[in-house]
Amino acid sequence: MKIPAYSTIRVILEEGIGLLELNSPPSNAMNMEFFREFGYAMSFISLHEEFRALIICGHGRHYSSGADVPVLLKEINEHAETDQTGKLLNIPGFLSKNYESFLLLESLSIPVISAIRGVCLGSALELALFIHFRLCGEEAVFGLPEASFNLAPGLGGIYKLCSLSGQAFALERVLKGSTFNSEDALKHGIVDKVVPKKVLIPAAYDFARQVMQDFRVEKRRLYVKKYLS
Amino acid sequence: METINKISWEIRNDIGIITLDNPPENYLFQPDFVPLDTLKKWTSYDYLKGIMICGAGKHFSGGGKLENLFRMIGNKEVINEKMDKGKAVLEHIENLDIPVIAAIQGICFGGGLEIALASHIRICAENALFAFPEVNQGVIPGLGGTVRSYMKAGFPKAMKLIMSGDMINAEDAQEMHLVDFIVNKHKVFDYSFSFLQKLTRDRPLTVINAVMKALKNARSLSMEEAMKEETRIFCELAVAEARRRNGSGK
Image 1 (tube, chains in turn cyan, green):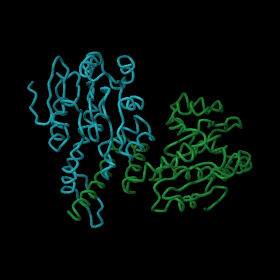
Image 2 (cartoon, rainbow over the protein chains, first blue to last red):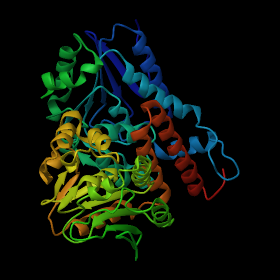
Image 3 (cartoon, chains in turn blue, green):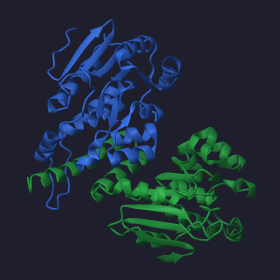
Image 4 (cartoon, each protein chain N blue to C red):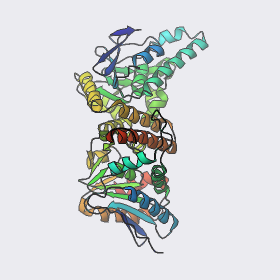
């Protein structure tokens, strides 16, 4: 098996544990190419049994600052059809593909672990919310700031935040677009464990080794209780 | 200010305030504590950005006077119709596309708790008390209280609350996810009002409506349907924003 080379992400595999790094320095912003490549990588990983666990993290200090908003707006405006009143007639295909790749990620039969350092904003948080387990560094910063650009999260962020942390927290954070820290994320069920950032990646590997032995997604809470509390 | 069936309505800035206005306990006269048509009229002002529900005086509400309901019991159809109307009122509140905050102090029992649970955010005073006392009179909550409390608190805790009829305090209610914030008893109204203003003041109504619709979908649709709709809603905002930034047109 040869792992394809990508330009915005990096995938390596060691002893059955894959590591997928978001890799567009400095803040690993998610551009159009990222979403394309991420979809390919998810298909590739889902088709290769050599991957028995997967860790997703950001290259460098940050997880990711989220989508590149000006580019995204331009692409949507070019591909979305509207009627005379401005009513939307279709969802551009690339947007549907983006959330389909998140659904594929969530449906993987291997444990997927997010290791979050630094900023994790917008679509990057949406991505993280589809991952089975979330570990974060002490100084991580989370948020769905879309409303402050007259937008709203669009890749399942509202749905996931609401089901993990309840309606009031989701409503407040999404509407204000305000960020929150690791402690709040833990308190509201958005991350499963906070660790010092220097040991984050080793902790993710340790956890992956423990949970990959007999992973079943419906036992998620049990693994969290057994290995992460 | 308008009043109907001891329920008052006023608008301050861009926030609508519904006051359960039958002190001291603010008992509700009937399941549809405010007629649906009246509520629809009140909530249809297109500049409103949020709604607050509170009680007059020291309490939120002691709920419905069950004696009133029992008087109707001879006629099963009448009582069914009344309960359906009550449920429609709470569904209208829950499905509004602007945020609704229940500002709770003192007692919040039965139908009062059902109104609070249909709101999007619950802020209560440290001295608030919650209960579903219906079992003491041989009935159960009938306006969605069993379902909404179960959705928030989970089966064991909701069952205990409903079956025992016992009162719980603010801390226990927060622990059960029945309330979201606890504040000083003198500050519930002001805190809730300013919370709602801070939440909405920098946001255009299109964004507020979009977020509320997505949350409604999160409550009522399957994950895949809710996600598809979330992307559609996002896309509508994105097209509008792209065109705004470009001046106009494609």
